[in-house]
View 1 (spheres, helix red, strand yellow):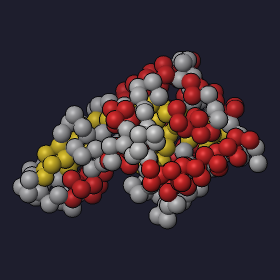
View 2: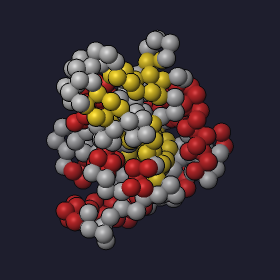
View 3: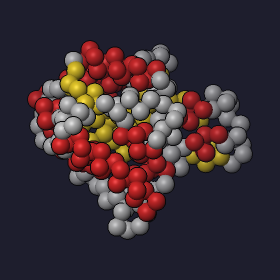
Length: 267
């Protein structure tokens, strides 16, 4: 077992031990725009014109194929930390960027773009949803340079650290720097019955149901699309203007933050 792999295991153990105290000031996360940026990629979406698109791969695949290097992590640190029983712990995130060259083989394996795309499709088939994220904590956990990496995570509702941090308001900085994918809108249709299913499922507390019709606060909504997938009346729709423009926008943003390989951008 390599040094970074052992270090990771120790950190994971300490994380579980300190979890009950994470709201104490000493354990509170202090994320900011310098240490965190994330975009949730909706699974249930269609073009503004009404045509269906293959999301989220229409956004994810250009990122994967444009990255300088790609690795598949051997496990999901969120599901491992939470002891997930609903989804495979072994379905890890994708690590993109030059930092792949520094990755401990015990933590993940470098793969081709085709292999990474197949991994992403498999994760989606398991009911997981994607999150593009650049977070210094992940880099620290794995012992790799923060300015040479980014992740595509495949998250579950039950264990996702991002969803929990946002839902429980553990880190204001993390909440403020996790964004809706550019060009995505979420709207409630007239067929809404006000049942409240969407309100209780919203990680961002962006939905208010008054018993007649739900209302979405666009300033809070992260555009994940979970409300649309859980609505029993199919009364919420997620629309995207242009997947290709969304992908190019993400490459420009994260290429400026970190050395990932997007158009030879560097951090």
